[in-house]
Length: 322
Image (cartoon, helix red, strand yellow):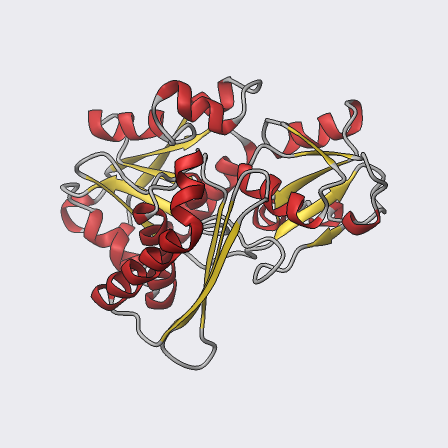
């Protein structure tokens, strides 16, 4: 690595088991690269606001603090101060707008994008739950999507990392909870899943779901090295499309938005599935966009047109109501 030999790179992360696992995976991949030979990685674990306050909903926290980045703000402040060299995130936690000077990019392969249903008894599937059963979830997107399918169920806020959710499911009056399959896979807890939801029709995932993001300052001297390791043209294009959609809709944790760009199997391009819902599921705008390119300028143009259509078809009223 030339001048970087023997350098220590400080890697910021939340201190949850899942965040630590993802960070270890990023470090393991970078350590195999010749460009990082001789570099020592030092993990700097921080508690985010979203980890410290487990009572209020995520949307409420965002409103109180004036930021959607309740899981990333402390790490971004560390990057801007120079306390850490780069940060590892679950990309779905990242706001569409980053502080000036910071950049985030997808890293590694995308995990399973689906949402998982976990019943307290480990057996009963979502559609067989008795009316009035209590589902614990902290995501307004999931609540709206689930209400559309089962308005007869009760949806209550549940907060905490994966292990905390399982403890609450066992000890508190929840009949089930919803978690990302990706996180359960990474923690080797996929055996807890009762069943999964179709990501193209039932529960369209959150923007960036299943993707690990690496964030750093654009002036950092090793940024280009990480970029060269992280090259995945299809994933980069898909994530760019999802995040551009969220940015133009001014979406964050308060907006019940599902967006999933699925790359074509043997060709250039992707299908973008979009679902924007009223929080009570009374109004819905769903779209499907086919785009045969990975070019960012073309993607930007197509997403701008899509957002214009969504807003004119009821999306503006949904956004205004929030």
